Amino acid sequence: MTSAVRLAVKAKTLARKLLVGVATIVTPETLLAWHQKLIAEKYDGSAREFRQRLQERLGLPAQDSDPTLHVKEVTSRSDEVIRQLIVETEPGIRLPATEFSPKDQAPSATIIFLGRSPDFLPAIPEILSQRLRAVLVDVRGTGEINSGGGRTDNWAWLIGRPWPGLWVQDIQGIVSALSDEYPNRPIGLLGSGGLGKSALFAAALTPRIAAVVAEISNLSYRQEAKVDSLSDVPRFLAAMDLPMVVALVAPRYCWIHYPSDIDDEEFRSSYGWSVSFYERSQADTQALRLQVGKIDWQKIAGWFADVLKADLQPAGAKSYGKSRAYSPRSYDARQGP
Image 1 (cartoon, rainbow, N blue to C red):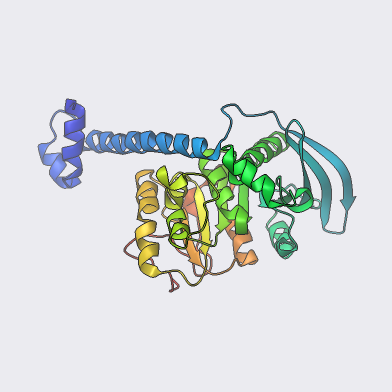
Image 2 (cartoon, rainbow, N blue to C red):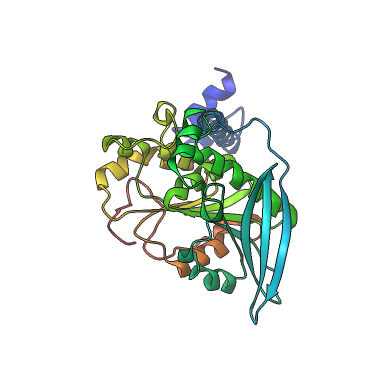
């Protein structure tokens, strides 16, 4: 351990007023800055290791493809412009998408919805009212391009290319294509149901995703294993669990919705890892939100608009509804703020 490291570690245990009296070689500010640098380096090293594990478990290729975006049709209504798109994330993989943009004003950011489900239709007016663009896309094996049976699922699982990994590859391609189409515009991601976990995987591995909302049915893969549910990713628990994936999104914004029948004790113990990573990454105190219950589209649209402002200024973060930043001391899964 170097002298600077030893000084930094000891400095953290003292209050600044005490440091003024004992720090003679360097200033108290320098000592505390060294300590912050040590925290950041430790966090970066752990995050790189876990991202590598996640990429391997998902069977993602080492090199990204070069996605392309094709406009098939454009229609206009009184308050919105609708474009029918095809996003080719890799040769032969063509994903249908529908884009909604507010008319006569430039959207400040783009929100990607995984799936073109009718359940998302109530969200569109709320998103547009916040001067955001909504893109609803069917990733491979879903919607219009559903595989149609379980044999494909088994084949993908056995060869180490499980569906969640293929979906992450599609999401990364979509993000890349939309980033090229709309440069300097932040991108948010929303996934629910079976695509909720893939939204978290993609956010953990894709820095261009500035904020993510995920609605998932289980707290963790460990919880799924307790009820003998087959993992959708082979040997995932041997490498990590879902709370670790959430941690890898830090310091970016993440809002997760859980079912109402969760166990409080398991909830707290499972996501202590996520909280620790967010603290070590120096994230905004409102960056990680965990909420019980279904999604409220008005609040989600407002949250996206707030956190995806230019340069993602965290100081402007607000509180929406009954969610709050999660900390072991203050969060109650069944209680509002």
